[in-house]
Image (cartoon, rainbow, N blue to C red; front, side, top):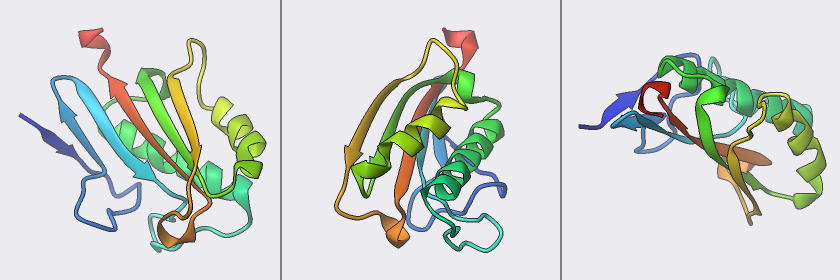
Length: 129
């Protein structure tokens, strides 16, 4: 049985999807962009501020599922411009400890709301590890 995960500490979905779905101890987190959960607006101030907001949003979804970044086994980073990779990678590294999750990073033509970065994640409950 799949169970939706929802928190008001992360932005509401901007389409027909859940913030995350849990099934059999695996939590599939939808991609987060740098939306302020209170206003629904994309944060301003550049790639660093946007990336920090993305990870705050992702952390809030994980917390709502009773998990944290240490439970993440796979992420995907979507960048509007790979020139931002170094900055995003540095901030991403502040949230994860070894062994790091598996990860893919890709440049995309465009992201929702003209965001510059989006990150999704898959996490596992330790009880099933």
